[in-house]
Image (cartoon, rainbow, N blue to C red; front, side, top):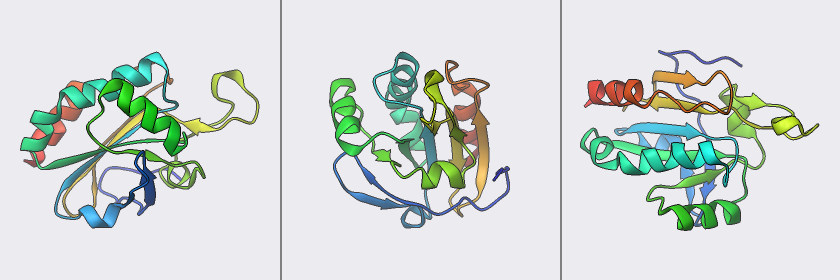
Amino acid sequence: MSLAIGQLAPEFELVDHQSTKHKLSDYRGKNVILAFYPAAFTGVCQKQLCTMRDSMDTLNSASAQVFGISADIPFSNAVFAQQNNINYPLLSDYTLSTIQAYGLELPNFAGLEGLTRSHRATVLINKEGVISYMEVTANPGLEPDYNALMNAVQSLA
C-alpha cells in the first residue's frame, strides 16, 4: 500500500519500550511524527533517533508527539532508549502490521533472506489525522532530511 500526503493516516495500536499501549487516534488534536527505523543499535538509526531527541524543544513548541517505530521487540527498544536517553516512546511493531499499513516493508534487510524490517521514513500527521509530510529515504543507510521535517512541523504550529 502506498500512502500519500493528504490521506488519512492508518490507525495503529502498538506497545512502547515500557510496555505502554499507544493508539494513533488517542493523539488527535496533536501533530504526530512517526520516525520509522530499521533496527536499534545501528549507527544511522542511533543518529536519527538522537536527532529527534535533540529537537524536542522545537517539536514540543509545535504540539508534536514523536514516536519511533521499528520491528524490534520492546525489550531491545528499552535498552536502546536507556543507552541513548531517548525521551519519547519507541514503539514495537514486531508483527509488522503498522510497517505494512504504511507501505514501508524492507525485505531481506542487511542481506538476510527472510528478515523484513522497516524502511527509514518520517511521517508527519496533522491534528486531524491526515498525513502532511512523508519522506522515505532511498536506502536505510541515509538519514532523513531533518530540515524539511522541521519546516513541515513548524508550518503546522
